Image (tube, rainbow, N blue to C red):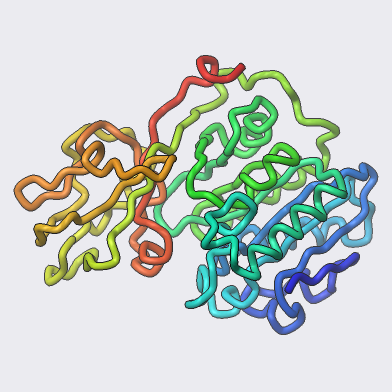
Length: 340
């Protein structure tokens, strides 16, 4: 399933994500030499409709197309088939960012999961320097970085992109968590697809990473980081209907609910209206334990927060909600109190 190349196909430099399938047969790992031999690993299009990373990568490759790279570079171009249809993933496909080593046993059985294991093995042998996985959001979110290990090097890598950093250990099977066993790793959330600022910001970051000779081991100054911990994933049960406008459903979410992302909200904040006696949402903590009552209440047909919390990744995209989740809940962390 995995294809490896030692040079850049010329078509890759200016192709749209939807046309990659015309010259790449499937997921492709490309290795390029550079002055420093330990490679920077970059993954794009693990979700086929999140193409800002591809555009930033193309701009980077055009700049260095006939020049020596400051550091060796390994590039994974991920779910090319889904990108062809402009979708996160195709029906019947696993999520390409839930099947890396560390995924649940159910996910680990997929051929794509075996491919991800192979990629990790390849990059371990190449002594990967750092890993960057590029994504987009469908809702209104700031640009931010994610880490899965509370380590100074990881936070240094993340804050090179944004002072807003999210630490999480769930969902399992994500690329950054697998690569955290090998090197400092981060996930970049670059806003909505197609935004010029997202492409430019990602490009600046990738070029800065290429020029790093080392990643600092010392702590990030507290005034240079806003660190949050993902404490729950919020899903809509499969048997609950929902919308952002229609009234003939079990849950009617506020049509601007994604504006609540990255706001520290008080308890009682409304997310929408409820028209059912069944549990409208399910919250699970970072260990997979259900904690719905801790965070969500239904009061007088209103869906409200049970305690102060900060949401992220709230989206109005119903397909994404069904394929992944409604959002995540976060709490603020103070770096100096938890990092040794």
